[in-house]
Image (cartoon, rainbow, N blue to C red; front, side):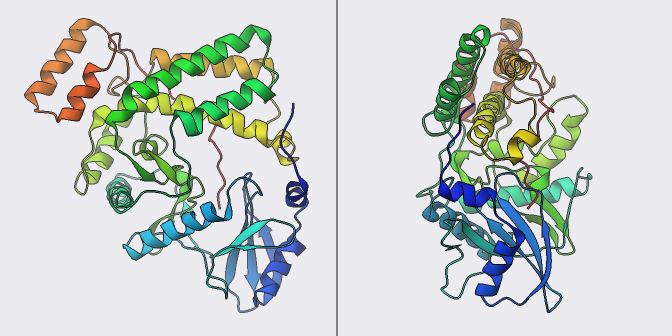
Length: 382
């Protein structure tokens, strides 16, 4: 199994607490010597105590993942959201005015205030409307500009490079290689068939419960490391419950609050199975690219085995077939009768032009969609 490596990467793997404390001391922080590594695989993140009893968080970025300009755009985006009134946590500027610094070891880093909030594993019925309005505001603020340097979550820039990397670098069993490639390409086709009907703009990109903190001042969005241009429903599917009929009520509470501030058409959620599938592929490529990092083989001991790739194929196939919540609008129609019934209901409800185009683009053979609960993606917890 091969992976990219260079001198900066080796320095990153060998990063020690003393290196982090040196960075703070160099920037005028009087540290107490108390330092705690936070749960992060992609970056190295530390909580550091100061002599005045306060704490800061130091985030050391993995070299080669983002350019300095891309990191700066992420930081500028967070500040833009804060100025517009959204509860977020921007980094602390250095004396130069920049929020990024790079040492001789080539590792970019930033310093953040510590938010003493907690991760909410499950949202209550009272929480859901608050989060719904917050996400609507985030999307409203975000649509005013386009990104200059960040990734575009589409096939050309995001999905296909991940698949190509897997096909080139992974030791896929011969018996699965063609099936995996064919299923991945079918997933891309489903995305392209529907993506034009879903608003494409700046989004959080990794909007799950672990990236929303509950604090004394309310909920706070954190960790915009995957900020990108993408379909807005990418910010829904990891956050909202999709998977069984009992989740429908919770989802509706959230969406009703979201709709108070911004239009959303639930037919757009038909893109979610393809987004899920693309995420599976991207996630596998992400692990493969990081395999030289000693923390990755420890975190993913079964990665790259025949059983691993068999499961990836099954999950992608299940998404294409559609096995999920009966109330989730998936790609495929159960039969022409149900399809015509849906079209009739749309006409009665006077759905917008995009919805009509979206429905007309779908094949007939609807089933349900699966929820893959085996992986929680690139959870960082910083």
